[in-house]
Amino acid sequence: MANEETPVFQIQRVYLKDMSLEQPNSPGILLEQEQPSVDIQLGVEAVPVVEGIYEVAVTATVQTKIKDKTVFLVEAKQAGIFEIRNVPEEQMGVVVGVACPQIIYPYLRASVADVITRAGFPPVHLAEINFQAMYEQQQAAAAEAANSTAQ
Image (tube, rainbow, N blue to C red):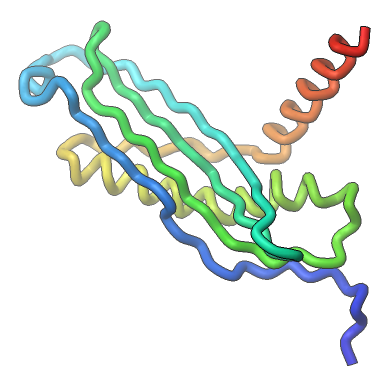
């Protein structure tokens, strides 16, 4: 008989929730010889779905520009549904802010590289991310913001 207090962490599903590609200045920008600049933004969000079930999503925005003109813009959101039960409240932030994104991120990297390649460009491979460090920075920033508003 299973102990009802045993922590449960299971992946229910990983899926591509949203993907968009824009090439607003094609075909003219494709004739440019200059190397484009690349800007990459990442984000993590977690939403409770029902008791013990959470949707965690990692988003990436990849924008390349030549001078002030966009070559392409890719926005992608890779998500996962996770069953998380009997985990102490003080550990939930790390589970949904670090463990879940680490599982989802490789799928996001592949989706982004694939759509950029299919658009006719060399793939942009998103760098490996230390979600633990990212989570700690967010926590420190939130604590600092709370301290500054309390004064």
